[in-house]
Length: 115
Length: 114
Image 1 (cartoon, rainbow over the protein chains, first blue to last red):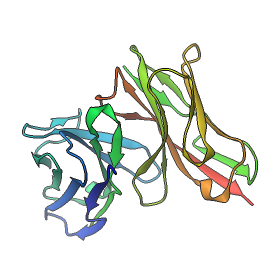
Image 2: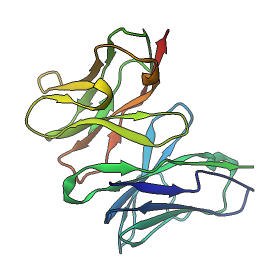
Image 3: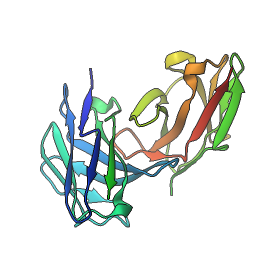
Image 4: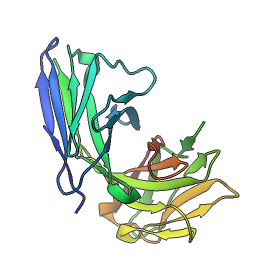
């Protein structure tokens, strides 16, 4: 139980285009999801907290207009990287807060390469 | 501010040797503490967590960690390393309870030599 599916697992896009990454909780409802970014050989940096039915809370320094987060249902949050640039290339990971304070479940990550 | 420090970005041990990965935290409120493992190009898998109660926590794959409040530490250990333990390990803290965001340490890459 408590599975989070993240798609796509990898994507290559051209500079200037937008890319959408999906994060789904398959067997539980997640009112809160988190989006992280991980640079090579570095730790996970929290980008934003996604709450179902409300606006995401972004961490300091994260451009909300560039990284659009939508959490329209209790099982789906999406991260859209708009007008992607090569410096946006990274590994993006989502996690979902399980109900009843049972902890966090992570997606398998998305490797984004902008060329 | 809350933070997590992992001493040693790279640790190398021989197969069968003791594994010790260090984690110290800073939190103004009682923390929840976690250890996660990450294999290349994958998400994170929970090894173990401390919330309240017993300070020695046992996790999966033979790992355990001990919460020491006086030392603000939560070091991860395993008595005997296996080749399959080679991975990146992250210590994380949620200050003040389970519904807060996770703050990660910088990670420790564990190499296991045959």
